[in-house]
Length: 83
Image (cartoon, rainbow, N blue to C red; front, side):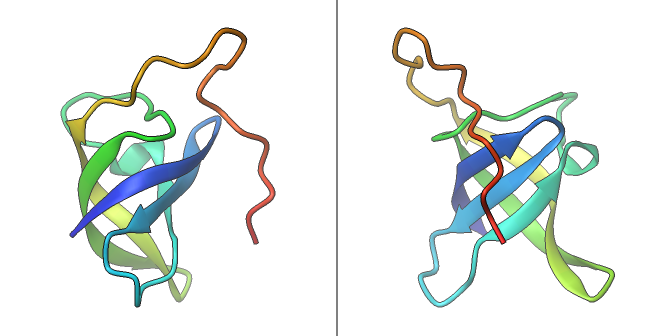
């Protein structure tokens, strides 16, 4: 499955799947492959859907393309406001 990172907060965040019928999917740093420690908003990824505590979670997350450089003063992280 493919998607775009839309929120990052420390060691976790959300991916918006390319499939518009699917809701945004939570990911944790522990699910990242290729020795990645973090992702940035706007990066394109591939992932598999897993389950944790009865909810979907992105696992085996692999970077496909990097995000464009952040504008001056931006860090690539956003405050968590996702429910």
